Image (cartoon, rainbow, N blue to C red; front, side, top):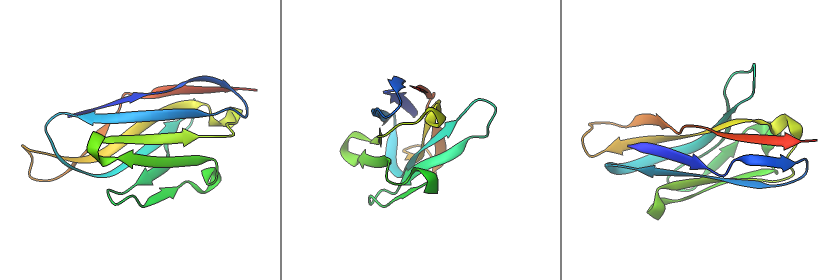
Length: 120
């Protein structure tokens, strides 16, 4: 099982980006999926998370600007980021709780990270 993130890049302040993260491999089911970010010199923090039923929760500071969604048929989670600010600059990591065909329970998987840079 692996997660492959894409969609990062450099954008000007006020711009938008859409991140995608696709899970692949011997997947039996996926529970929660989410996005975290880590800025230089700071701890990794939750950006948003979404359940298999589509219920989402966000970091309080990001509500209204970021939207998480998922396509269960494609095992993919998305993060639409609008009105980006320089302080949103970070490496963004996707995360998923996945049960594979060969496991008894679920395990946490992480994508490789994608850099988002917002210039002022």
